[in-house]
Amino acid sequence: MPFTKLGLYSSIVRAVQAKGYGEPTPIQQQAIPAVLTRRDLIASAQTGTGKTAAFALPILNRLGPHEATGPRVLVLEPTRELAAQVDEAFREFGQFTDLRTALVHGGVGFGKQRAALRKGSDIVVATVGRLLDLLRERALTLDHLQVLVLDEVDRMLDMGFIEGVKTIVSLCPHKRQTLFFSATLPPQIEEVARFALRDPQRIAIGRARSVTESVTHAMYPVSQGLKFQLLLALLEKTEFKSVIVFTRTKHGADKIAAQLKEAGHSVTLLHGNRSQGQRRDALAGFKEGRYEVLVATDIAARGIDIEGVSHVINYDIPLSPDDYVHRIGRTGRAAAEGDAFTLFTPRERDEVKAIERFIRAEIPQLKLKGFDYRATPAEPVREHAHHPRKQPGATAERTRGPQSGAAPRENRPEKKRHEQSKSASQSQPAGRPHPKGKPGAHWMAKHPAGSSPRKPGSPRGRR
Ligand code: AMP
Image (cartoon, rainbow, N blue to C red; front, side, top):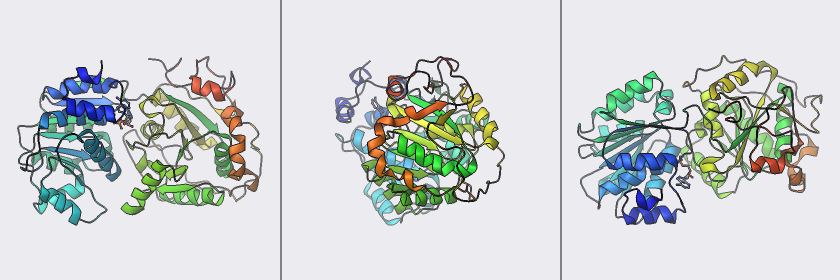
């Protein structure tokens, strides 16, 4: 069904076409007509499915022209980056209307945000803490609110924002439309939904636990002392456009970023200890292609939309299987192909199993061909403490990190461009036999038959 058949005004459809969208995604097909009925909605959808447009388009459609009453729409987001991204989407989709949006988040001064609110905004996209501050000082009121969007509610729960969310909900008019988006809907989330919604329609897209179908996964077992060398070798032998390397800790991210820079990669860094300006520059620079590698903690894993991320490398295995799904959701967004590699040490086998159980699929374990797994670590091995596994839904940015060896000179990336054709076909299955899956064409181009990591979902992981 094309966008023109969804009941949207031509000014909105034009903006969608200007964005280059062809067909609506499944969540858009279901949610747009549902939101247009003005009923409350609970949608569980996996990351990268197009859920921003699924709520932004029908909301813009119902607003009509600008009104100076104060915000009629409030969108709550768990992180500043997500808020900025959603604000940008509203601006783009509303470019042929006269509607005004304001972005409200912490980490920056209050001045501009107060000024934007004073001028009169139809739509406010906000993070919880700063919005509460501005509500307290009466820089805005929610008296004229018509639509409340609670986005990534599971993440807000993880980050401890739920009480703030409830306070904000209680300040909204009783008569309103509330839209509730969450990747997973455990009982605590259902409780928040009961608090905020009335007789909601429910939409579920895919399995809440499923990973993006267009991502190919592989696990790389390696000893702690050789992890960094393996990361360098993977980067060298993989034809990547842009890659996000995830670490568990801020300290670990700093260290890996510094070592990758030293090895000649163009690298930027995103984690919670960086200032808002640094975080903004890191994302902008990575999106513009000024940096080929973004080293990040899980703060970047949720919802951040960066076009063309070809690879995600989990330098540290995520603490919760939930985080695994979100991290690898950074690649393969909107059905573009992407690869996700995860390095793990022998002590982390249980974590690997937990991820496989969670996504209900086996992930192939590979060894990188040509990599010397018996090499002496360049630096004495200091095993990081074995952290107890987090339950899905919990979150953390830890402050202690893994230790890793220095970059071997022969792996310097000057060689990389010449070796691109070798790509990840250097990988060989390790340990387990491969299931007889039908790998994606993208992977086939790089992997000779028999060495293809299989996408969860086929065949054992198929529903
Ligand atoms: P979201 O899940 O909203 O973060 O969207 C993920 C990515 O998919 C973003 O880059 C969107 O611009 C893109 N996208 C959303 N809807 C469509 C569509 N109908 N066609 C193509 N790309 C889309």
